[in-house]
Image (cartoon, rainbow, N blue to C red; front, side, top):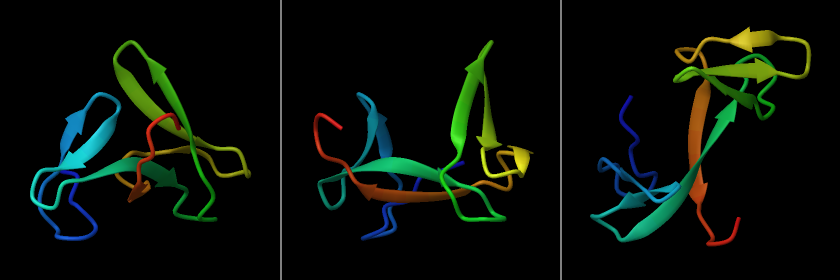
Length: 77
């Protein structure tokens, strides 16, 4: 899955814990939301795999169904 800049829609690069858009020189962090309730998902990492859990009763959510968005990244967050 390619991360696209919400401002200029160019591909972003993963750099030191956040996404960076070389085209417009902005930094973003990725948010994952449940497609059912639009609440933040808990990210579960194990053995190189990443899964997403909705803590509002919708259980495990496939990465294909997760709603990803990007918000400005502030150093130290």
